[in-house]
Image 1 (cartoon, rainbow, N blue to C red):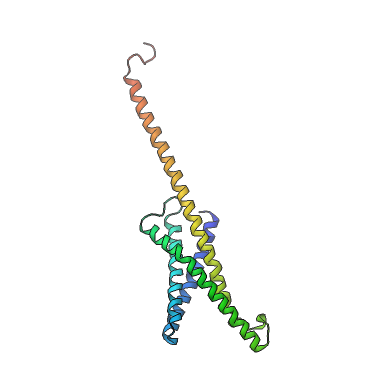
Image 2 (image 1 turned 90 degrees about the vertical axis):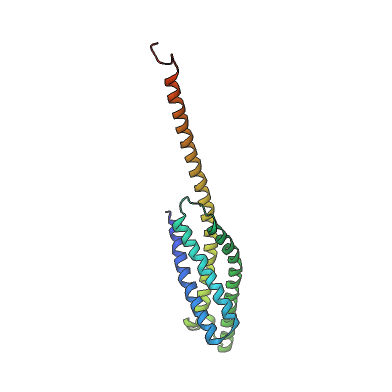
Length: 185
């Protein structure tokens, strides 16, 4: 497996851990704070987790030349489309955290970089998840194209080998049956 797909797998694992953590914390906040927003946040992070698991599944089971087909293709298409909504959701989280930090810096009359790291952590975590989501979006597109190309080239190689074998079988016995085709007669 090329290094780019190993790197993609590593990003998927990190994204899986991050989105699973945030989906669990959002689910806990749903019951502690009892706000509808946390239900949406839980669903969004669960969809991101599912998309990441699908990416790892495709990478491990379909690479290098097995085409995405059937139910896996349907799930892939739907999650790929939902991914654009999830990216918009993540943009909203990043902007919201930035506005919260900006308000906090105005209230404390300090710069953003002088704030404690634990206050900056949600902003950086959402930003990293957003970047990883873009990488996963591009990676899923790229791996699907590569799988299709590899599948088609494998199919053509198989057809070439099969047709060559048929030609060899068809010409060899026919030459033996034709009288006078032997040398020396």
